[in-house]
Image (cartoon, rainbow, N blue to C red; front, side):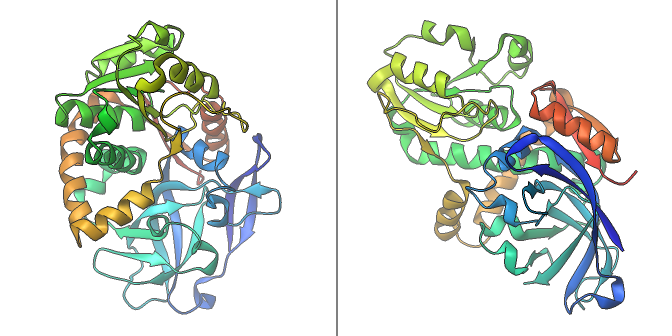
Length: 363
Protein backbone atom coordinates (compact mmCIF):
# COMPACT_ATOMS: atom_id res chain seq x y z
CA UNK A 1 0.00 0.00 0.00
CA UNK A 2 1.23 3.52 -0.75
CA UNK A 3 0.78 6.94 0.80
CA UNK A 4 0.88 10.15 -1.22
CA UNK A 5 3.02 12.74 0.60
CA UNK A 6 3.50 16.45 -0.08
CA UNK A 7 7.05 17.49 0.82
CA UNK A 8 9.11 20.69 0.67
CA UNK A 9 12.82 21.44 0.34
CA UNK A 10 14.03 22.35 3.82
CA UNK A 11 16.54 24.94 2.53
CA UNK A 12 14.16 26.47 -0.06
CA UNK A 13 10.50 26.36 0.91
CA UNK A 14 9.44 27.47 -2.57
CA UNK A 15 10.45 24.03 -3.86
CA UNK A 16 7.83 21.34 -3.26
CA UNK A 17 6.72 18.04 -4.77
CA UNK A 18 4.50 15.00 -4.28
CA UNK A 19 6.01 11.56 -3.65
CA UNK A 20 4.69 8.09 -2.83
CA UNK A 21 5.87 6.17 0.24
CA UNK A 22 5.39 2.52 1.11
CA UNK A 23 3.00 1.56 3.91
CA UNK A 24 2.52 -1.75 5.68
CA UNK A 25 -0.73 -3.50 4.81
CA UNK A 26 -3.29 -4.22 7.51
CA UNK A 27 -1.98 -7.73 8.24
CA UNK A 28 1.66 -6.68 8.68
CA UNK A 29 1.10 -3.76 11.07
CA UNK A 30 3.10 -4.08 14.31
CA UNK A 31 1.26 -4.81 17.54
CA UNK A 32 -0.77 -1.82 18.79
CA UNK A 33 -0.25 0.07 15.51
CA UNK A 34 -2.95 1.90 13.58
CA UNK A 35 -3.13 2.65 9.89
CA UNK A 36 -4.88 6.02 9.58
CA UNK A 37 -6.26 7.66 6.46
CA UNK A 38 -5.78 11.43 6.70
CA UNK A 39 -9.27 12.70 5.88
CA UNK A 40 -8.76 16.47 5.94
CA UNK A 41 -6.43 19.05 7.41
CA UNK A 42 -6.10 22.81 7.79
CA UNK A 43 -3.30 24.85 6.28
CA UNK A 44 -2.53 28.34 7.59
CA UNK A 45 0.44 30.71 7.92
CA UNK A 46 1.16 28.96 11.21
CA UNK A 47 2.14 25.84 9.27
CA UNK A 48 4.68 27.94 7.39
CA UNK A 49 6.14 28.89 10.77
CA UNK A 50 6.47 25.17 11.55
CA UNK A 51 8.51 24.82 8.36
CA UNK A 52 10.70 27.86 9.07
CA UNK A 53 11.37 26.56 12.60
CA UNK A 54 11.52 22.92 11.49
CA UNK A 55 15.14 22.29 12.49
CA UNK A 56 15.20 24.51 15.56
CA UNK A 57 12.06 23.05 17.16
CA UNK A 58 12.37 19.52 15.68
CA UNK A 59 9.16 19.66 13.66
CA UNK A 60 10.91 17.88 10.77
CA UNK A 61 11.47 14.82 12.94
CA UNK A 62 7.74 14.14 13.36
CA UNK A 63 7.09 12.83 9.87
CA UNK A 64 10.33 11.75 8.19
CA UNK A 65 10.95 12.63 4.54
CA UNK A 66 13.80 11.98 2.09
CA UNK A 67 17.12 13.78 2.73
CA UNK A 68 16.88 17.52 2.21
CA UNK A 69 13.09 17.51 2.34
CA UNK A 70 10.51 17.84 5.08
CA UNK A 71 6.84 17.03 5.61
CA UNK A 72 5.13 20.01 7.24
CA UNK A 73 2.94 19.05 10.22
CA UNK A 74 -0.72 20.03 9.98
CA UNK A 75 -3.72 19.81 12.29
CA UNK A 76 -6.57 17.69 11.05
CA UNK A 77 -8.63 14.52 11.13
CA UNK A 78 -7.81 10.91 10.38
CA UNK A 79 -9.90 7.73 10.14
CA UNK A 80 -8.50 4.45 11.43
CA UNK A 81 -8.70 2.01 8.51
CA UNK A 82 -6.73 -0.84 10.13
CA UNK A 83 -5.95 -1.49 13.79
CA UNK A 84 -3.75 -3.86 15.75
CA UNK A 85 -4.74 -2.23 19.05
CA UNK A 86 -7.58 -3.94 20.93
CA UNK A 87 -8.91 -0.63 22.26
CA UNK A 88 -9.11 1.22 18.94
CA UNK A 89 -11.69 0.03 16.40
CA UNK A 90 -11.59 0.54 12.67
CA UNK A 91 -13.62 3.64 11.87
CA UNK A 92 -12.36 5.62 14.89
CA UNK A 93 -11.91 9.33 14.09
CA UNK A 94 -8.80 11.03 15.47
CA UNK A 95 -7.99 14.74 15.71
CA UNK A 96 -4.37 15.82 16.02
CA UNK A 97 -1.08 16.43 14.24
CA UNK A 98 -0.74 14.75 10.85
CA UNK A 99 1.67 14.89 7.93
CA UNK A 100 0.63 16.45 4.64
CA UNK A 101 -0.10 12.97 3.33
CA UNK A 102 -2.90 10.54 2.63
CA UNK A 103 -1.93 8.05 5.38
CA UNK A 104 -0.04 7.71 8.66
CA UNK A 105 0.97 4.75 10.81
CA UNK A 106 0.54 5.50 14.53
CA UNK A 107 2.08 3.40 17.31
CA UNK A 108 -0.83 3.76 19.75
CA UNK A 109 0.04 4.13 23.44
CA UNK A 110 -1.62 5.51 26.58
CA UNK A 111 -4.98 4.72 25.01
CA UNK A 112 -7.93 6.09 26.94
CA UNK A 113 -11.56 6.94 26.39
CA UNK A 114 -10.73 10.41 25.11
CA UNK A 115 -7.44 9.95 23.31
CA UNK A 116 -4.09 8.31 22.72
CA UNK A 117 -0.54 9.20 21.78
CA UNK A 118 1.89 8.11 19.09
CA UNK A 119 4.82 6.34 20.74
CA UNK A 120 6.98 6.16 17.59
CA UNK A 121 10.59 6.68 18.65
CA UNK A 122 11.32 9.43 16.13
CA UNK A 123 8.48 11.55 17.54
CA UNK A 124 9.59 11.67 21.16
CA UNK A 125 11.92 14.68 21.00
CA UNK A 126 9.09 17.23 20.82
CA UNK A 127 6.49 18.58 23.24
CA UNK A 128 3.93 15.88 24.16
CA UNK A 129 1.04 17.93 22.73
CA UNK A 130 2.33 17.20 19.22
CA UNK A 131 1.99 13.45 19.70
CA UNK A 132 -1.50 13.45 21.24
CA UNK A 133 -4.66 12.45 19.35
CA UNK A 134 -8.21 13.08 20.52
CA UNK A 135 -10.88 10.46 19.81
CA UNK A 136 -13.64 12.65 18.40
CA UNK A 137 -16.00 10.30 16.57
CA UNK A 138 -19.58 11.30 17.39
CA UNK A 139 -18.56 14.62 18.97
CA UNK A 140 -20.61 17.36 17.23
CA UNK A 141 -17.98 19.96 18.16
CA UNK A 142 -15.62 18.22 15.71
CA UNK A 143 -18.11 17.42 12.94
CA UNK A 144 -18.71 19.30 9.68
CA UNK A 145 -17.96 23.03 9.65
CA UNK A 146 -17.35 23.07 13.41
CA UNK A 147 -14.66 20.47 12.83
CA UNK A 148 -13.10 22.68 10.14
CA UNK A 149 -12.96 25.53 12.64
CA UNK A 150 -11.30 23.22 15.16
CA UNK A 151 -8.59 22.26 12.64
CA UNK A 152 -8.08 25.83 11.46
CA UNK A 153 -8.16 27.61 14.78
CA UNK A 154 -8.15 25.38 17.84
CA UNK A 155 -4.33 24.95 17.94
CA UNK A 156 -3.83 28.64 17.15
CA UNK A 157 -6.41 29.71 19.72
CA UNK A 158 -4.67 27.53 22.30
CA UNK A 159 -1.56 29.64 21.63
CA UNK A 160 -3.67 32.81 21.95
CA UNK A 161 -5.11 31.47 25.21
CA UNK A 162 -1.65 30.70 26.63
CA UNK A 163 -0.19 34.08 25.68
CA UNK A 164 -3.17 35.86 27.26
CA UNK A 165 -2.74 33.76 30.39
CA UNK A 166 1.01 34.43 30.52
CA UNK A 167 0.60 38.19 30.13
CA UNK A 168 -2.18 38.36 32.74
CA UNK A 169 -0.18 36.20 35.16
CA UNK A 170 2.67 38.70 34.87
CA UNK A 171 0.39 41.76 35.17
CA UNK A 172 1.31 42.62 31.57
CA UNK A 173 4.79 43.48 32.83
CA UNK A 174 3.49 46.90 33.79
CA UNK A 175 2.10 47.72 30.34
CA UNK A 176 -1.39 49.11 29.83
CA UNK A 177 -1.47 48.54 26.07
CA UNK A 178 -0.73 45.45 24.00
CA UNK A 179 0.59 45.74 20.44
CA UNK A 180 -0.11 42.80 18.11
CA UNK A 181 1.74 42.65 14.81
CA UNK A 182 0.19 40.72 11.91
CA UNK A 183 -3.13 41.68 13.51
CA UNK A 184 -5.11 39.93 10.77
CA UNK A 185 -3.55 36.54 11.55
CA UNK A 186 -5.69 33.95 13.27
CA UNK A 187 -3.48 33.70 16.36
CA UNK A 188 -3.44 37.49 16.69
CA UNK A 189 -7.18 38.01 16.47
CA UNK A 190 -7.76 35.10 18.84
CA UNK A 191 -5.55 36.85 21.38
CA UNK A 192 -7.17 40.21 20.64
CA UNK A 193 -10.59 38.65 21.29
CA UNK A 194 -9.45 37.36 24.69
CA UNK A 195 -7.82 40.64 25.68
CA UNK A 196 -10.84 42.62 24.53
CA UNK A 197 -13.36 40.47 26.41
CA UNK A 198 -11.38 39.53 29.53
CA UNK A 199 -8.91 42.40 30.17
CA UNK A 200 -11.08 45.49 30.13
CA UNK A 201 -8.31 47.77 31.43
CA UNK A 202 -5.89 46.84 28.63
CA UNK A 203 -5.91 48.68 25.31
CA UNK A 204 -5.51 46.35 22.30
CA UNK A 205 -3.67 47.84 19.32
CA UNK A 206 -3.48 45.92 16.05
CA UNK A 207 -0.58 46.51 13.65
CA UNK A 208 -1.26 45.50 10.05
CA UNK A 209 -0.69 46.27 6.39
CA UNK A 210 -2.85 48.84 4.61
CA UNK A 211 -4.57 46.11 2.60
CA UNK A 212 -5.81 44.36 5.76
CA UNK A 213 -7.02 47.40 7.72
CA UNK A 214 -10.70 46.96 6.90
CA UNK A 215 -10.70 43.28 7.83
CA UNK A 216 -8.90 43.94 11.12
CA UNK A 217 -11.32 46.74 12.00
CA UNK A 218 -14.30 44.53 11.13
CA UNK A 219 -13.28 42.00 13.80
CA UNK A 220 -14.33 44.43 16.52
CA UNK A 221 -11.71 43.26 19.01
CA UNK A 222 -9.03 45.92 18.46
CA UNK A 223 -9.32 49.28 20.18
CA UNK A 224 -7.03 50.83 17.58
CA UNK A 225 -5.65 49.68 14.22
CA UNK A 226 -2.36 51.14 12.94
CA UNK A 227 -0.60 50.43 9.65
CA UNK A 228 3.06 49.44 9.76
CA UNK A 229 4.18 52.70 8.18
CA UNK A 230 2.46 54.66 10.97
CA UNK A 231 3.65 52.83 14.09
CA UNK A 232 5.83 55.76 15.17
CA UNK A 233 2.68 57.90 15.36
CA UNK A 234 1.80 56.09 18.61
CA UNK A 235 2.67 58.06 21.76
CA UNK A 236 6.26 57.06 22.70
CA UNK A 237 5.52 57.35 26.43
CA UNK A 238 2.89 54.58 26.20
CA UNK A 239 3.86 51.56 28.33
CA UNK A 240 3.42 48.66 25.91
CA UNK A 241 3.73 44.89 25.68
CA UNK A 242 4.57 43.74 22.15
CA UNK A 243 3.29 40.39 20.89
CA UNK A 244 5.13 39.76 17.64
CA UNK A 245 3.30 37.47 15.23
CA UNK A 246 5.11 38.87 12.18
CA UNK A 247 8.75 38.06 12.94
CA UNK A 248 9.92 41.16 11.09
CA UNK A 249 13.30 42.37 12.41
CA UNK A 250 12.95 45.87 10.95
CA UNK A 251 9.52 46.38 12.52
CA UNK A 252 10.75 45.07 15.88
CA UNK A 253 13.73 47.44 15.82
CA UNK A 254 11.48 50.39 14.90
CA UNK A 255 9.08 49.68 17.76
CA UNK A 256 11.83 49.17 20.33
CA UNK A 257 13.57 52.34 19.18
CA UNK A 258 10.32 54.31 19.36
CA UNK A 259 9.15 53.13 22.79
CA UNK A 260 12.56 52.58 24.42
CA UNK A 261 12.20 51.69 28.10
CA UNK A 262 8.42 51.83 27.72
CA UNK A 263 8.64 48.53 25.81
CA UNK A 264 7.86 46.41 28.86
CA UNK A 265 7.57 43.03 27.12
CA UNK A 266 8.58 41.82 23.67
CA UNK A 267 7.39 38.30 22.91
CA UNK A 268 8.18 36.55 19.65
CA UNK A 269 5.28 34.26 18.70
CA UNK A 270 5.18 33.81 14.94
CA UNK A 271 6.94 34.38 11.63
CA UNK A 272 4.17 35.43 9.25
CA UNK A 273 6.54 37.89 7.54
CA UNK A 274 9.57 35.55 7.61
CA UNK A 275 11.85 38.59 7.72
CA UNK A 276 13.90 37.91 10.83
CA UNK A 277 17.60 38.69 10.70
CA UNK A 278 19.84 36.09 12.37
CA UNK A 279 22.13 38.85 13.69
CA UNK A 280 19.83 41.29 15.42
CA UNK A 281 21.54 43.94 17.56
CA UNK A 282 20.56 44.60 21.17
CA UNK A 283 17.42 46.74 21.31
CA UNK A 284 16.16 49.33 23.82
CA UNK A 285 13.50 48.14 26.27
CA UNK A 286 12.60 44.58 27.17
CA UNK A 287 14.74 41.95 25.52
CA UNK A 288 12.84 40.09 22.76
CA UNK A 289 12.26 36.46 23.76
CA UNK A 290 10.46 33.52 22.18
CA UNK A 291 7.23 32.48 23.85
CA UNK A 292 7.25 28.68 23.98
CA UNK A 293 3.71 27.44 24.56
CA UNK A 294 4.64 23.96 25.92
CA UNK A 295 6.44 25.64 28.85
CA UNK A 296 3.26 27.47 29.86
CA UNK A 297 1.23 24.29 29.37
CA UNK A 298 3.54 22.33 31.69
CA UNK A 299 3.44 25.10 34.30
CA UNK A 300 -0.35 25.39 34.28
CA UNK A 301 -0.91 21.63 34.16
CA UNK A 302 1.03 21.38 37.41
CA UNK A 303 -0.72 24.34 39.03
CA UNK A 304 -4.26 23.69 37.80
CA UNK A 305 -4.21 19.91 38.07
CA UNK A 306 -5.75 17.26 35.79
CA UNK A 307 -8.23 18.77 33.35
CA UNK A 308 -7.59 22.32 34.55
CA UNK A 309 -6.29 23.60 31.23
CA UNK A 310 -9.03 21.81 29.27
CA UNK A 311 -11.81 23.34 31.40
CA UNK A 312 -10.45 26.89 31.11
CA UNK A 313 -9.62 26.57 27.45
CA UNK A 314 -13.05 25.07 26.73
CA UNK A 315 -14.72 28.08 28.33
CA UNK A 316 -12.58 30.44 26.27
CA UNK A 317 -13.27 28.53 23.04
CA UNK A 318 -17.03 28.56 23.66
CA UNK A 319 -16.89 32.37 23.69
CA UNK A 320 -14.74 32.50 20.57
CA UNK A 321 -16.27 29.87 18.27
CA UNK A 322 -19.61 31.67 17.69
CA UNK A 323 -17.69 34.57 16.08
CA UNK A 324 -16.08 32.42 13.41
CA UNK A 325 -19.02 32.23 11.01
CA UNK A 326 -18.75 35.98 10.47
CA UNK A 327 -14.95 36.16 10.61
CA UNK A 328 -13.98 33.29 8.29
CA UNK A 329 -14.84 31.84 4.91
CA UNK A 330 -13.77 28.20 4.61
CA UNK A 331 -12.61 26.86 1.24
CA UNK A 332 -12.02 23.17 0.61
CA UNK A 333 -9.41 21.75 -1.74
CA UNK A 334 -8.70 18.17 -2.80
CA UNK A 335 -5.78 16.50 -4.52
CA UNK A 336 -2.08 17.37 -4.93
CA UNK A 337 -2.68 20.32 -7.27
CA UNK A 338 -4.99 22.08 -4.79
CA UNK A 339 -2.63 21.38 -1.90
CA UNK A 340 0.34 22.77 -3.81
CA UNK A 341 -1.56 25.91 -4.82
CA UNK A 342 -2.72 26.65 -1.27
CA UNK A 343 0.76 25.94 0.09
CA UNK A 344 2.45 28.36 -2.33
CA UNK A 345 -0.25 31.00 -1.90
CA UNK A 346 0.15 30.84 1.89
CA UNK A 347 3.95 30.81 1.71
CA UNK A 348 3.94 33.90 -0.52
CA UNK A 349 1.30 35.84 1.42
CA UNK A 350 -1.46 35.59 -1.17
CA UNK A 351 -4.22 34.22 1.11
CA UNK A 352 -6.75 36.85 2.29
CA UNK A 353 -7.01 36.94 6.09
CA UNK A 354 -10.70 36.01 5.98
CA UNK A 355 -9.89 32.79 4.10
CA UNK A 356 -9.49 29.42 5.81
CA UNK A 357 -8.28 26.40 3.81
CA UNK A 358 -9.26 22.80 4.51
CA UNK A 359 -7.38 20.32 2.34
CA UNK A 360 -7.00 16.66 1.49
CA UNK A 361 -4.40 15.00 -0.71
CA UNK A 362 -6.99 12.45 -1.77
CA UNK A 363 -8.71 13.45 -5.01
